[in-house]
Image (cartoon, rainbow, N blue to C red; front, side):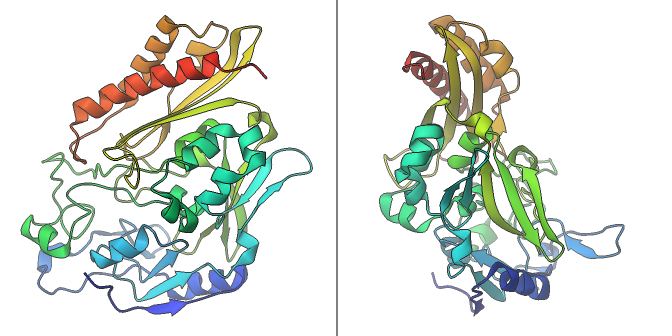
Length: 363
């Protein structure tokens, strides 16, 4: 499979990248070729009067940071942009910097390998380094970025295929069609979010900095995802993710990440669990659980903090936490493993991660 034709834009500053986004980012209807007249994406008129695409698929511009996800998708003709915005020359978006008032700032172009090897993050935010170390393979972590992992496209067996394969199945809601093969008769896309670092970042109360022509804004990571498989993130076409912030209040948590995948390397998670915990005098003072790869968005397990706080981290408590996480998991037939198995592994991994965190040495 070959890449479609596109024009490469290479800004050297954030301001220049924003200019390109404003100039070239616009919804685009797929050409009515062999895909048929019914393959047009749905459009909606918003109060502003602007026409916007109902998904992130059909934009005239795509952003590339590491390219480990975008380039294969372009080869599969999932994205056919007129322009590709290459951010790699913007040095100000790289690096891990401790903040004077506490906490840390991570540039969106910081590679996963840098995060994995960061002594500062390993000491203060270990769940993030553990999650980063499980992404793909060492070669891909050398290229892939934290910003790219946060903005990772959702995945599905019916979507991540060649154009010929998808055409033979009549396409799907996420790309070029109006049918969900995973939930026939439904109107929601259930493509699953499969990033490793976001559940860890959710546990750490991460915030994102988004830049646009009107300035920058901060948004909590938990508000960044929509829970929809097609239009999966709250990011405008003219906005750019520039930085990730972790607060001082999240430092010092013991962290554990567990990941289900077919192979021991390369693969996306088919289920993932992040657990962070602080203990005091043998009891759990605070704890959070995040899950990934079993819903259209990474999620914090609601009620987990209340369940765990003030208790001993024993087998029964870990079992209850696993049951709670499993109930929040909504896996469907989006991957090679069955939904039942993936939900069960969320339960098992949560139990194991809670016990591992509870048995770690107190700070």
